[in-house]
Length: 161
Image (cartoon, rainbow, N blue to C red; front, top):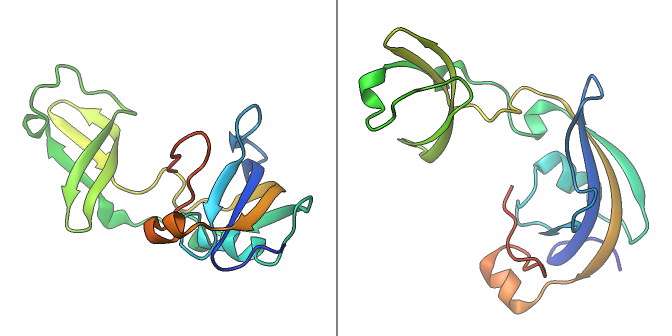
């Protein structure tokens, strides 16, 4: 069976950036399952997996625009520390959920100086070209439930990336 719209595919992957640094991998874990055509995974990878079958191994280079998008400098802002009530110590690398016009967004603290905090709403991998080493482990038809919910129901519960 080939990967197509309304099929659920499972694959093992290793994700590296352009320098070869490993950013993420399914090694030692369950493969990642996704519902094809539902936008569960980044567009560039989903396109590359179309028509593949179990046992296929591929290396997919995905440009940033087809991955987590290009960096958007308007998502970087400085806020006074008073905006972060109830947090004693704000440190670089902390993540917060912020209400934005686009809905709930994860922002990362990138700089703290005095009572000014710089936050960045870009995805950590925005602007990064990605390389995926992929091995397809399973392809099956999606269940009615999965089609209704718009994502695969794996044995190990829900994994949202």
